[in-house]
Length: 301
Image (cartoon, rainbow, N blue to C red; front, side, top):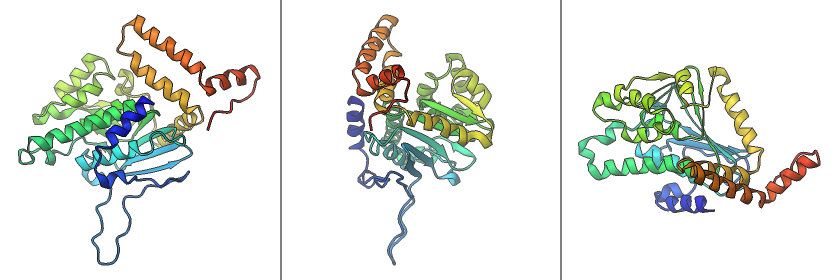
């Protein structure tokens, strides 16, 4: 699959300590922040994300609440690795990205953006961030953002980049870079593709936050629920996706994004070709046969 090949190419650029793979290859594989060190050795730095997978659902948690889950270079590379890990595995059906603490993500770590760090380091940060956002778009399975709190700047960009976004009613979203002299140009790429232009530009020009309900109204979110129902509703959607045919969902996701920027005629041409390809899949025929025979379909493993 072309998408998987692209993911593998990007994976090769990830540092070696991350490529070792955060998850054990188990059906209920759990990812930890780091293993205990031997006596006399310094405890390793904990990974800034935690990932675990069960029943086809991979949960990736931004796990640095003391730093407001800032998208530091370490956080971005860790998140990148968790997204890339066994992306072509048939056992993976959907990914959920959430966060510990009251802030989903405050965006980039500004301490990494001072002039002392240098232009090359700055370029590496924004390039890595862009790669992570594109990985979400190009990933063969749907990626869901589960937001319970504030998402600003690149944190808002992360939400806008996900295929589905579910938030609690206490959440809010902003692109406040203009207030500190750093316009949110990269967050604007994802934001401008998720909400109407004038809404995006007001957020970008003023830096003022919008509520979860406003974000829902403008298309940044898929759904807003009470905080106590957030995990339940997100998992309900994830389980539904995980119960469906991975090849069919993957084909549909790729085509959806491929046809979006096309003119109407080209979009219909691409989608029509995909419908034919879909019928050629084993699961495409299985679903039709199951419907005709009035039984539940048995999807390919």
